Structure formats: structure tokens, C-alpha cells
Image (cartoon, rainbow, N blue to C red; front, side, top):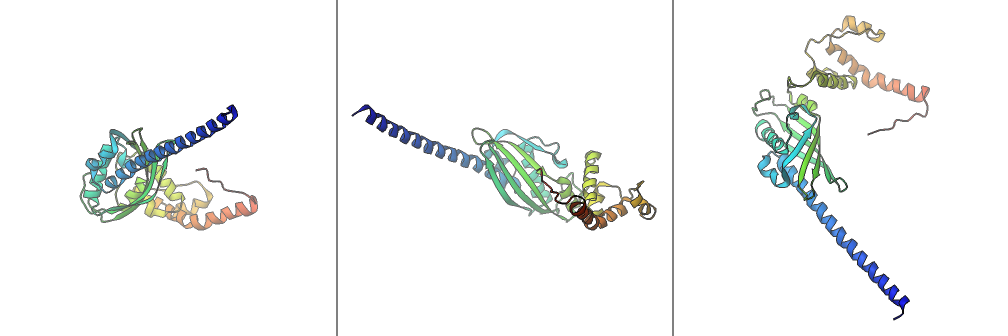
Length: 263
């Protein structure tokens, strides 16, 4: 066998070896991905259906961390405590509630699964910390971001949830511990988007007073002197007047302008 023939055969063998290694690694990666995603989805159902930590712990490390920028969850720092909180909501406050998984994904680069879901329930049970049963229903969207460790177990969960919106649907008053800045911001968004008093009232006292040193509002001040009336006025102009104003900006003042979403 000549040296050139040997090199050719040896090179082919090396290529075959690398191809086999790549296929083996791909199978291992796929297996690891399936295991990690399976642990995340395995946690999701018992957590959202109120089975508590006893059913959820098999998919997590024991000290898994929980985080959420939502008023009812501000004191909950562990996944264990969160699953018990969900159990109290699903079993006691809203028996018969349900959830719908809208989408799911997994990023292998960050070992993070993301789930988007919708929770539906009616407040019919007595639970300490909540008002008496309102018999009102909520349909609220949420997102879970779940990180898994090298063993494929969940070690951190972040929940993104508009709790104030959900509380308003269920007829719950916000807890006194909620910072006033949070109420003010929630009021601002509800008012400026034209949702009216129905959405804004949860952040105000019923006789909240309104005042403005602005020409378009000077008559409103004298005739409609409460926040309730102002939010209804905003509701009336938000849909019609604002869209017409935007039309004049986009068509007349700035033809060819574009709106680019940043997130």
C-alpha cells in the first residue's frame, strides 16, 4: 500500500469517525433536551392544577428559587412556597379552576424553558387574605421562565403576571402593602389607554378629585370634577380622537413615518 493510498484511506476513516461522533453527540444532546423539557412540563401540570409541592418536588431541586414582580407573590421566594400558594388558590379559593398551555419553548444555550398559559377560575371559596367569595371569574395570562441545572432539574422559576388585572376581574381589592407608586402606574396605563372608570376604580377612592390647568379640560373641571368623570372622558376620546390625531401626524406632518417595536 503506497503512502498516498494509506493517507486517503486513513482520511476516510477519520471522516467516518467524526460523523459517528457527531451523531452520538447529537443523540445525547437531544436526550438531554428531552429530559430537561420533560422535567419542566412535568412540574407545570401539578403546579397549575393545585397539587402542591408534594407532587412538584420530583422535578426540582429542593431549594429552587422563585421570583415574580406581582403584588400577591412579592413575599414568595421559593418554588416550594409558590406551589403551596397555587394549591390554596386552586383548591380553596377557586375550586374547579383550569389552565391552558398556549405555547412552550426551550433554549438549550441558556437551559431555559418558557411557557405561556392562561388561567381561568371563579372565586367561590373562602381563603384567608382574600375578600369573601365574589363569584366573579378571571381569565389571566401568565409566563413561566424555568431554568434547569446540569442534571436537568428545575432550579429557578420566574413568573410574569399582571396580578392587578387578574384581581380586578375577580373583584378583589389590592392589598394595603402594595406601594402607591404601583397603583399610580396601573391607574395611568388604564386611564391613558381609554379603559374608563371600570378599570381605573380599583386604584382610586370612589370620590377621588380631578383637577387640571389645561385648556381642553377647563370645562370638564367645572362640570365633571371627579376622577371617575375624567376617566370616562378619556375613554370617549381615546379611541376616536387619538386615532384621528395619529392619522394627522402620520399622513400630513410626517408622511412615510414608521413605528418600530422594540420588544
